[in-house]
Amino acid sequence: MTRAWILPLLLLLTGSVVATVLSLQGSHGTAAALASVFAVLAFVHSPLIFPASIAAREAERRSAVDGRPIVFWRPGCAYCLRLRLRLGRDAWRLHWVDIWRDPAAAAEVRAANDGNETVPTVVVAGRPHTNPDPAWVREQLSPRG
Image (cartoon, rainbow, N blue to C red; front, side, top):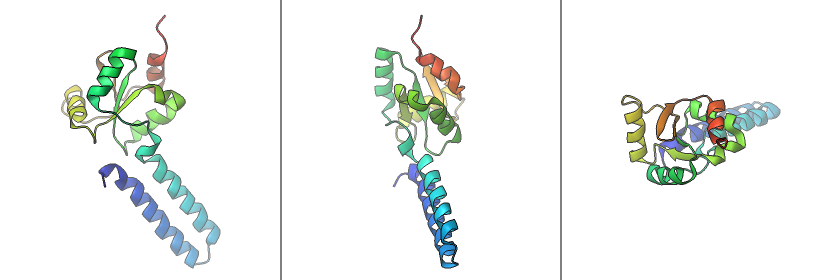
């Protein structure tokens, strides 16, 4: 099990325990509602909500061909989740690299952020941008006029 799944599994486990206790106390409706809330939180904080990650080298190769930005991210990062959700369907047009799966990607992020693994780090035309505004990232996807 990778550390990317620790938070979602803890959320599911906590939700199950809380729902079981409430159910045993006779609060079946509340138990079901809380179990649902914890399940949604687990999904949102899981790697499943993000587009499939690729290796940093492959992302750089693809970006050189199609000009699309590269997003370095990690599961459990609230700022990465914010970027992903605010981009909506446009998120699938970027190249996503999970720094927890690719040591070379983590090294690139550290090099761009004074030794810190600060994510999301978005690379556009070879220049890194740390935690950029999602609207700005969306603009980078627009065709150049």
